[in-house]
Length: 192
Image (cartoon, rainbow, N blue to C red; front, top):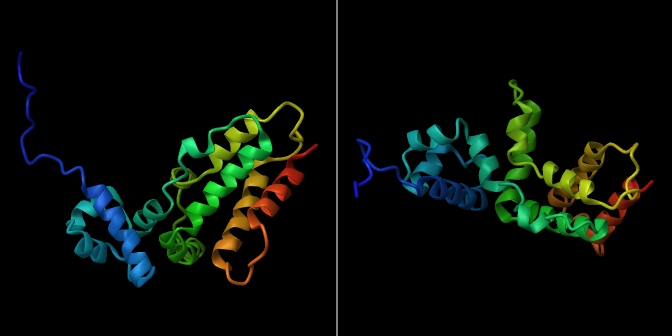
């Protein structure tokens, strides 16, 4: 049996991505958004800056992927029980936004988005967005349980706003049962 043909050059280091992403998360928590630069990540991770730039064209994209890698499809797999599925979705989404690195990055990423001279294409945001999973949950809901006149994107935007508010102002908004309250409001918006 013939051995697989080796490509010339050094073998690809499969640990580079995770080392850079882990270092990005650590730096965000330890030093903050502004200090989390490509060079700082390179120094902290032992990954050369050029290798990081080959994978992420900017520090913003690196920070976004490190902090908001998207929700695990398993954690939000639709069952058809709208209330239960929304509760699991909101719980997973809150957990993603409440991670220490995400908390450290959220305000800086929002500020960057507001001041950026070059708008980024929507497909870049869909890569880290939970919008597709939310839409899957709505599609799996029992017939007649969602008002057809309601735009699911509007409801998702409202949900995202609630989660961002809880993330950015968590001390000021210490309310009882915030997840249940959020789920109930989303259900009210969706019902016929």
